[in-house]
Length: 498
Image 1 (cartoon, rainbow, N blue to C red):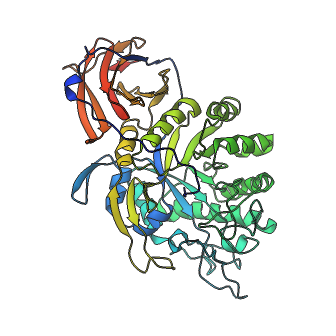
Image 2: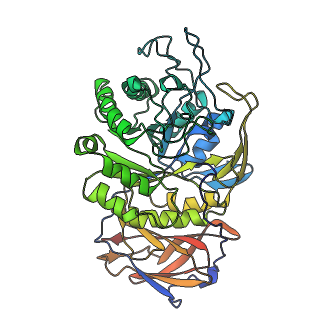
Image 3: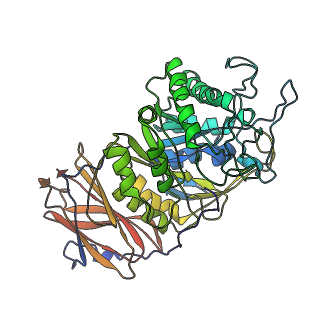
């Protein structure tokens, strides 16, 4: 999300020769896909809107790039749309008004203007969303992208980095004076819940956006939310979280949003998510429909343990709701996705900012505007496409919502089956230093008919190959593909019946 995190090392990618794309190549490794496994039904890939959409959310080209699978012309080149099906909308915590009593938002000296998202409930004088205490014209560009994503078939989640500034003890939406200090006033626990529920209600009744879930806490246990931080944020102890969640359920239900799920707690790491979940008692857990977790933990996070606690033992949903890093090449991102899908087994995976001004963090670059108000005084400028954009395409364009996630038994490969169309998708990485011919053993499937011409479509991303379609040949119930060092490949086999 920001540069405080330890980044994985950037890696290159190699080019696979099309002359090796035959089913008779010698196998260096064999990967068996198991149709009997069930790792959940895939819900989708996505991005948070937040800062980039605040700057450029009124432009259709970015909605097409991120939320369709069309070929999209961008800066003179044709790019494959990523086909994201999830947009996370950030309810802002800032406003520039002065209350009747003379109160104003307190601003961190270190927050960049373009990281301030204007919220809708701008003073405490009235809870009535039709009153002058509310400004529904706020945050125009992010709202515009939310609507564009919805029109292109995406579903959305509402989340908040901080309560509205006036709900905070120090009126600063970047955090309390010190780290690990609660900053939400106790008498505003219900107000924070009411704010989010009102935004969800307004979105459904006025914008045509039906949020599938609301997440009230963004990285609530993290140590970096303090008054001089670089963005909006609010530490909320697990006791505060437990106090707010019943209010959120009640406020959603009161507005007729009984089907809107509650997600919690968007912790920055899998370890923190596990600790928070274990700290919740049974009544609190009952209020949570899905656990969201961010993927900023390095080393060997307890992915499988979190899955067992949340899904197996508690029967809750599980999303990776935010991940980002500064590897512009993207191979570390790809390896992280593979590890998440195999061990954590979420049903959705969301990148932090599809566009970012931090070097190499975004799938696309952009330069923010310079203004301090609702919209930039000087316009933001879109930038270049990063290599990681094409690696993301390997996953997001092929593993689609509704597919059944399967096991491969290999840490470098994941598989998904569209049971209706009979399409099997396999995404594989070669993290070694030399080319490997990898055979996919499909003998456990009852039928593997393939295409009439026997051709298997595959897509390669490597040096000189951004996202290029190639072919292989089906050999009975197996297919062999060459995968060069530090390269990602997607294989689609048709006519497959479990």
